Length: 386
Image 1 (cartoon, rainbow, N blue to C red):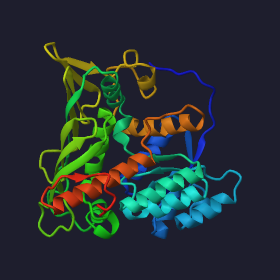
Image 2 (cartoon, one colour; image 1 turned 90 degrees about the vertical axis):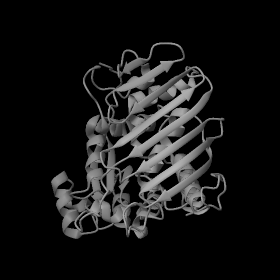
Image 3 (cartoon, rainbow, N blue to C red; image 1 turned 30 degrees about the vertical axis):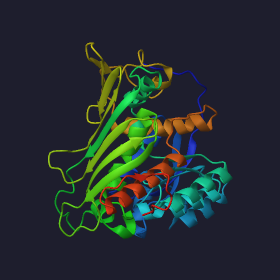
Image 4 (cartoon, rainbow, N blue to C red; image 1 turned 120 degrees about the vertical axis):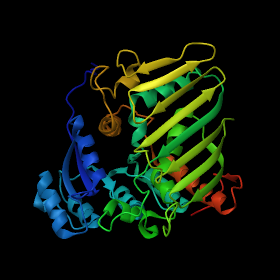
């Protein structure tokens, strides 16, 4: 098992905004933050509903005095304490990401933020400037790049094992919104509401994950997109399906498919990268395997082994090969990497505010292309805003 000797570090003091009782992603963040014993949850504003907020704090062992009514009260209260929170995790609906992240940065806090980072390109660029001014670390929770074999796939591409890239095909396909959800489904309610989710539905919820994974592994940025968005369920205001052709600045071509109305698919994030010398493929539902196939050679099934993947990748492996690791551990690897970074070990692979700007430009260009009947639309055009 991988073991990196280090002095026992102190725990970073973590506050959370959102993620109250019944919220899936808040619980995932809390497990991830504690997995390597690098963070301690000391404060929070978990819900806009007072009773639910207090009940969540008690359930998590957060002192009543550090359970705040809203994020403004949290920042003010923690600023008065010598042991105030150093890092704030934002796990709220999309429309709250920008004002909360901006306020946290201005208060001198490091930020962990759920995606999509903002509701538009202008907000994303403002946040990028705020990060520069603050000198604080901003981590965008594109958790899928925390899988060790995703990082190894990126390494294979970077060192030329695939040769010049030709194609990048990525998809993220789910079934959970195939029918109109019940009135009590809070997760669906805000994702289908333009006021809280923004102008991108499936595109902003999971399409941006697929986009980020494609850029992360390929090492190339998408320059243009030709897209069609549509809504499969009658009466829905936001897209629930995305089909897009991609042109990469490095010369590769690609395709992206995202859907939340495809029966039979649970959480089908997968990617294929094809080069002139070899190809690789990886799927999130079997994350401990990476398939590598060289030209005119036998295909290889690579497993997650800390003694085979190199020291940088092995940092994120906690148990020996053959013992499955998955979604929670990938999340935890982003928290672990942030803690390492704040201790002085630069972790350049962590998704940053710049990735958030790229993601918003992708969303804007994809929406603009779909409105223009699939016309090729550049991501660099800041006029294409949702």
